[in-house]
Length: 110
Image (tube, rainbow, N blue to C red; front, top):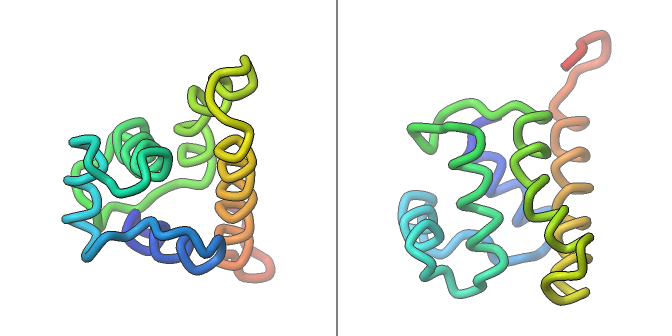
């Protein structure tokens, strides 16, 4: 799955508006802190940066994507941020797992 496909899938699975126009524009807005939803902008940017991607069409790995959100999750677990965003983060992580589970064919391991 590519980074773009991941964002599209997460948007479809969660109902959150991750994409603001196309994926390029979304990433630019997110990394500049101009995404309409600051929390989602941070999620979008963290995945791209922490997975060390150089292109929105690069393949992403399940473990790397979940690990990329670790610092954000730890921050919320330490009591920083609002409870609603912590619930959204957990919903996004569940959607990541579901997206990668759906992408695996029987008999494959990822």
